Image (cartoon, rainbow, N blue to C red; front, side):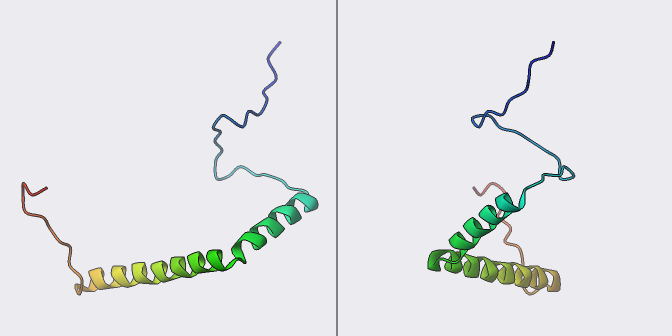
Length: 80
């Protein structure tokens, strides 16, 4: 007889990107309202804006490196 597997929140678990999780409408609503409550705070809005600005800068850096405007800094051999 095999032992029943039980969830232990102190352990780490894994799953694949293809695995599917199902929520009830009540569970989905609770998660949605919790997330909306957090991201509607002034602090969260500032973080979201900073993330958006960072994404813009990263895209600009990609274009600038690819066009040769920005060049990689190469440290001299032995310099650390």
